[in-house]
Image (cartoon, rainbow, N blue to C red; front, side, top):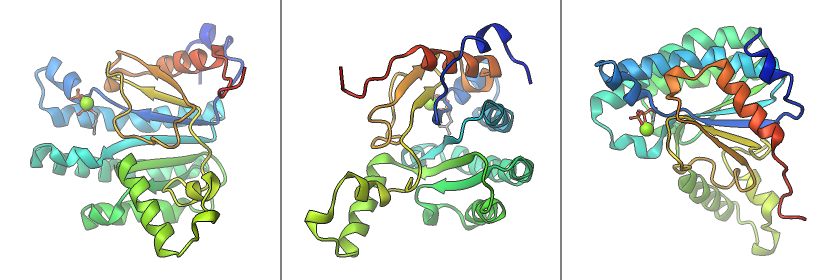
Length: 239
Ligand code: IPE
Ligand code: MG
């Protein structure tokens, strides 16, 4: 699948783990005089094609921020509508991603989501659990602070002695256990912040911010983000 040959040929180094904060659905809808949910519908509908495109690039780990623990503060109709849209997309798109070898996993507090949404997430994980291609992590009802609090609780509950706690052990208690840290974080929608997303896992990530609103984000925009990553020099604090 070709998007933008000119840019593509300049990309010489790829991230292993790409995390995305898809922002701007509401503004996209408002600009068109549509209800916010129409923006979420358009935004969530885009996900599969872009995930497949990253898969074609050979990206091994993709993590999407679908719903944050702070998003509960939105009007009830928006929250419920968004859950319904997410469920529909999971049920339609995961079987297609499954055929491409994608393995789906959930990050966050599953137990606080409506039972019908929990079911479709669990079914998606179950269907794809033996796949060995890209790992697609869906952060639904995810919060970075809460993830760290949940990890501490489990470490204490497991009775781990303080001297055994190091960065490696701590990472293994996060929702993201087994995933590599994020190399490239993409945020659309013209906001320059992390919003409580993967705060531990992005300590050394490269950030790519764009004004493009998520429903307008294209394969060519992915190429631009990959190119920006490819052109950066990562030193991890060394000289
Ligand atoms: C991002 O779009 C989607 C979610 C947070 C679920 P927004 O709904 O935040 O869109 P804006 O920021 O209001 O445009
Ligand atoms: Mg927003």
